[in-house]
Amino acid sequence: MTKLMRAAVTGALAVALLGTAATVPEAHAGDAPAAGASGRVDFGQRLQPIDGFGFSQAFQRADIMHGARGLTPEHQREVLDLLLDRKSGAGLSILRLGIGSSSDEVYDHMKSIQPTDPGGPEATPRYEWDGDDGGQVWLAKEAKAYGVKRFYADAWSAPGYMKTNGTDANGGTLKPEWRQAYADYLVQYAKFYRQEGVRITDLGFTNEPDLATSYASMQFTPEQAVETVKALGPTVRRAGIDLVCCDAAGWDQQAELTAAIEADPRAAALVGVHTGHPYVTPSDQPLPTDRRTWMSEWSPNGATWNEAWDDGSGYDGLAVAEAIHTTLADARASAYVYWFGASIGATRGLIQLDGADYHVSKRLWALAAYSRFIRPGAVRVAASSGAEGVKVTAFRNRDGARVLEILNTGTDAVRADYALTGGGAGGSARGSVYRTDETHSLSRVGSAAVRDGRLGVELPARSLTTVVLGS
Image (cartoon, rainbow, N blue to C red; front, top):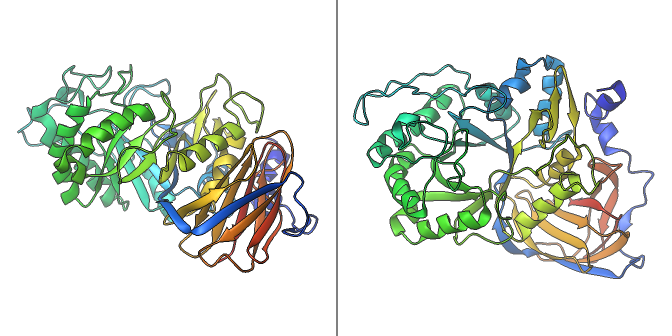
């Protein structure tokens, strides 16, 4: 990374990233919209609550981020700031931890807290704890220091001796006689983190149960998932943790699991959050539950590292922004958890770790445009764009701040005019306008002024505009 590149993301980087508003005309109503775009936002019409936005550093990526492959202490702090700082970075608010994950292309394994059979499901457990957990303990402590309060721990597989195939890889399923021991195992993992000063708030017993993979994996049919929820749920609840299920690889596949759980009153009462991934099928419709739903893992496919905003690759920043919009607006998810925050090689993570150095993709800023300003406890509200190719979501934070995320996917610039109603939005208000595109990385480009309940804003082609109105 050159000194010039580093200046854009480090140290006094708030000025470099936010730019100066004085050189940009104020965004306000009064000038005629260039393309007749007239939308509406009703801050009084509540839709889904927002729990937050997050990332994972499972499979030893936290260890690499902590310097295992040469990343300097200075750069470790800069990467942490990019992911977790609310002023200069993304301000991500959920950390997803991997429990006992197995082999992948980076390291041989992540340590299980009970690597060997204690002698059967009724035997006294023989737990082991190294206080590091593949670097995840360090990262969790750092995240907590930045203000993160939501820690979601998820197991890719039970230990192999608890499964039908005798290994933590290649699928297989949990043996019924081991369900209680597995519940105790998961809760013990949370207890180890508690002794490190981190409270696990959400706990999952499976990841992508619709797949069998060469690395850690464990399969469940919907019926098996229901029975496992009923067996594990009471133990997890007594520990004061929300049980999460089921992180299916496809959103439609998760819908089948969710429907089965909801059809069983005991199981339905035990699951606090329903989670799914949009790898196989997209997260473009609500899951069949009134409980919270999270998109809990995704990154786009691709064969190379890509830092572009809009190059048509499908794994650029604009593609991520569109995926976030669809998940929030169409699937009505309450959380959006990206896969790797930082990884190596041809990663589609947000940041590429490269020995002592690192590189930043526009994917980071696509996510940051949402996560920095839409905070845990916010609520999504009703919004319409009024223009073809323009996609809008709007939110009201607990502190009264209001946020519009406006994605112009078209090839022409648009001047949009929005009527703001509800939630005290009918009068006047002021705020800031931020832009993310090929030449801006969540840069402040001007002021926003609401006059008589109307807001006008310029939307460059192929850009994401974030409007933040003060409380």
